[in-house]
Image 1 (cartoon, protein in one colour):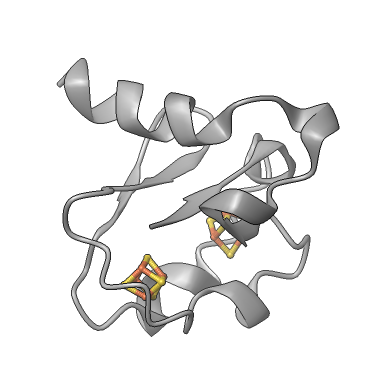
Image 2: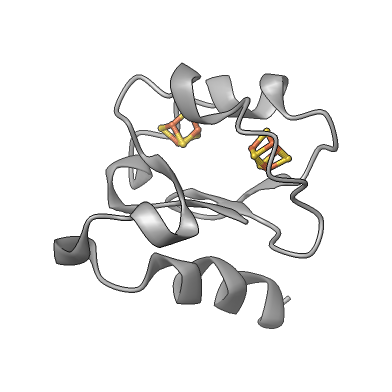
Length: 78
Ligand code: SF4
Ligand code: F3S
């Protein structure tokens, strides 16, 4: 799955939402999140984010911590 990492927080550009063929990008209070069970790994969202917040789960820069966890936690909390 792809994940949305730290740069999205308080930016929420939303360009990614329109690119997703399965509409699996959901809006939270301060950032958007990718539903890991719905993401089909197409990669379409990644290049359109102006702040480069979107990464394949294994490629999230380490200094941003476990955003795979934070994306999944968002949906667990719903
Ligand atoms: Fe949607 Fe594709 Fe991005 Fe997954 S990788 S969130 S399916 S646009
Ligand atoms: Fe956030 Fe980038 Fe999408 S800022 S809303 S991940 S286009």
